[in-house]
Amino acid sequence: MSLRQVSDPKAVARKVIELLEKYMEWHHAAVWIRKEHSENIEQLAYNQAFPKVDMLRREQAKSRALVHNIHTGLAGWVIGHGESVRNGDVANDPRLCKSERIRPFGLYVPIKLGDETIGCITAESMRPDAFSAYDERLLTTVAAQAAIALENARLYQASRQVAARRDVLYRASQEIAQASQDIEKVYETVHRTAKKLMRADVFTIIRVIPGQNEIQGVYLIDKGKRLPLLSVPFGAAWPGKSSPLENRSLSPTL
Image 1: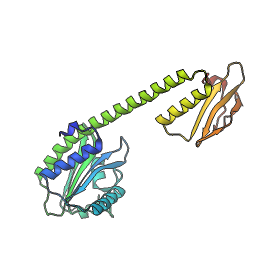
Image 2: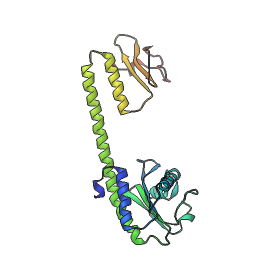
Image 3: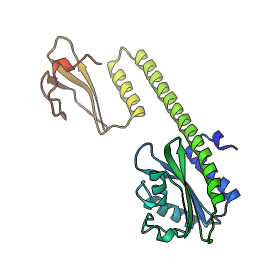
Image 4: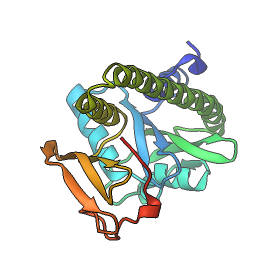
């Protein structure tokens, strides 16, 4: 299966390591990715040659804990600088985390999408001079394919999320239309829909009644509990707000 046919980022990373198993010798390998445009990075896949399952999990957990942004570890440095590292003395490299257990021979290649570095592929070995210039070119080629596959996977996941959100909103509109004569059911539908689309401890539906000099909090939820209706005059501070609500800033809602 081609890398481009994989639609999940973690599956892409696992496929990358499978390719490395065919064409290179290493003790352990990993694929890292930058979280959007932040300085944080995430380990998508990790494997060791002939590992014991319990040891593999411990090593993977340690690796994730120590290397978590572009300022930690060699993987972070490569993602932050967009440059490859082929090192025969990794243990003494100043860019290495002090507590990071690492093999003395390593190859670290950035995953680039255009001019942007979005991740890194790492391979380490105990064998002296384990990685050659040929290995670096090979890993660079794999990284280029991985970049396209990861971007395709990201776009695919994003399109699915958009489609799912549209489906939630469509279903909500149907429910609201059917419950239009029962305002409480409308409120509950709006709240339930909002919870599917976002996380919030506090949810409020405010109603403005034309001709009355007040606003009403008709549906107030705080940490899962329904609070009683609350009326506040125009110009008064709404509970939890630092500035008073003004008539000109309000428009009729539910």
